[in-house]
Image (cartoon, rainbow, N blue to C red; front, side, top):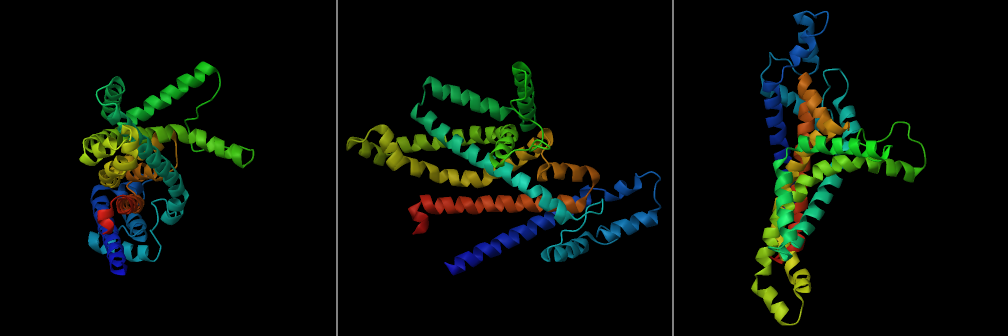
Length: 326
């Protein structure tokens, strides 16, 4: 077990290092931080721009691998560099990471939980009207881009609020500025702001999970051990819950690790459209400016989140499948 744990840690560190290298090289080649300084009015001299870039570790006269080595050494000591505005990337990271973690965690749990339940429910009713309706609805959601879905939800909230005459569904920001009241009042306010971004992130996951879970459950429904359990007196529902559901969840653990990246991508659009100051909106702002250090910091967060999702999937597989424990 200690050897297995050390191998997992070494693998995680290597993956983070490779992802950081890839993100830094791509960002350095694709983005142009020099234009951010040269477009100022009045336009600064070239020597002043070179000095600014050198202070940020973005001196274009040095090879990109040398710049990455300098950045990585400082990152290992807890310093992710500075933004083009001269502020600390660490401070901006700390301000935004909690916002994204809250949206990603709620969206992931909601999408996976409801999607699995919907898939099992559709499989049990295979060929009936509920199953056909679930199929049509799932493919309809999957065919709509995430940013379009977010805009539709926002427009729906506006129409609903206008219809009832006051704001019921909140669609801007993570909380109401200057909101008073106690803990539960503030918690309810944050929950109301969280509803639409979570729906944007979760709907695609619900549609995807329901399709995969339906197929996995149908395979289990035709298994011999389930028919044997029913022959011994269990109802189909009890037989599925006791002997089939756990088996059908095993392939979903792999899908969970790969599907998390789609959740993160959806959160980028949700944060931007609903005005959430999270990692996704920061990434878009940084990419527009050409802020290499900020883009790499967000990419590193995304890589860490995906790796963590993979570790959670491994833990779920370990708990569900006795063969893995053996």
